[in-house]
Length: 464
Ligand SMILES: Cc1cc2nc3c(=O)[nH]c(=O)nc-3n(C[C@H](O)[C@H](O)[C@H](O)COP(=O)(O)OP(=O)(O)OC[C@H]3O[C@@H](n4cnc5c(N)ncnc54)[C@H](O)[C@@H]3O)c2cc1C
Image (cartoon, rainbow, N blue to C red; front, side, top):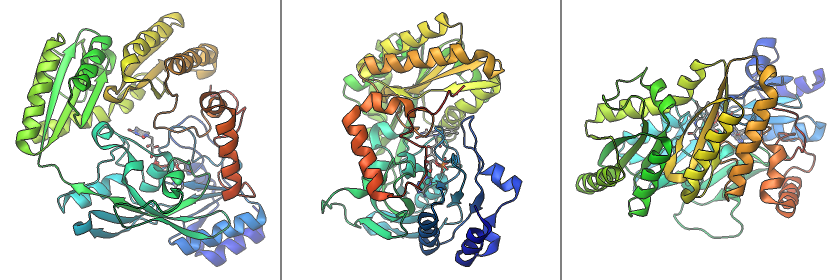
């Protein structure tokens, strides 16, 4: 970025919001993947007007512009691959309005997900999306990746709570989408087009998010099985018996062992795979549904079943579940986290195939995930260095992708395509949808300055 462009940026935001030091550039060069690429300048705007002026300048000057939230992404979306400007939205962090009687909230893009959830809970309201990164991730990043979370099974993900957006187009035009009403079908659904577009179409500056009344009561149910397949069968049976718990998670024995280092699990659980469920709603209904799930778990041959009613104990259990990735990352220097979903009835086949892949390539794979949604996170754990393991990692990951696709699944369930999976996008969705998406990109971003190198690059190089 030339000096004269830095000067123009300093006419838009105050100089304290522009960073060019090596330290700041490094902090904005990566996300939660292993990749990195330095931006040339980091800018922290505080209003939609400033974002618009920066975008306009970048389009006029042909400078790459990469929107960024907290940088917790797992697909490389916020990495400024082509240098240019890293546009961090974290200073736009105000919760502007909570409209209780109409059940919505208006927030700026940089609000941290957990802060929003806690703030509305204080008013007995509920914002359900809960990616496990919620202590750091931002609403803008959640919209960029269409994040889902533990409670998506019953409540859906970020996409389902968007009523409207304020976005800035790469050309600098500010646009409002959606409405403050429960219903609106006026024209194309631009709100949901932006959701999951990974910062390639527009920059989200604020959002109108739907709220629900806070559930009165929650019950957690835990069941242990001899294998992950059995745990997955039990989780599938819960759904086929007509229950919709708010959460339905599975984890294999290695994952259980790791989280048991952070939380005292009941005796009888060691060495087993787990299913964890949560019911919520009015007290009677949540208790009744929990009893029903407890029975399904027992009928499926559980070696141990426990209902956890005390709120603190429930929260500790879910906190431990949220810590799974960190616990895995502590075990080995290299963790390769995957994100495949298959139809629920094929989960057991997918689990068997992952185990077979591990055996074949002599790789340790821990598998956990949102069993109720058919979404698995097989995580390959290796002793570094990564370069020495690259061929078998590459082969194992390819096998996992191929199996997921052959079972009618997807290889990106909630982490996005970013840089990590660009070579697979066309294969999964097909040539014509791929080209249609590119035409949409051209319509929003005629000079291709917004987050270049994401989604569509056909050969992004090896991940390993
Ligand atoms: C430990 C851990 C657990 C995780 N658990 C989950 C999970 O349960 N579910 C899940 O879905 N994900 C999960 N993730 C992935 C990640 O947290 C989510 O993708 C999250 O939504 C990213 O938010 P962020 O603010 O960190 O965004 P960033 O990583 O900064 O950006 C993500 C993408 O969104 C774009 N973007 C960011 N802000 C904007 C904006 N204002 N306008 C337009 N585009 C924007 C970026 O360009 C990028 O493409 C997890 C990650 C980690 C490290």
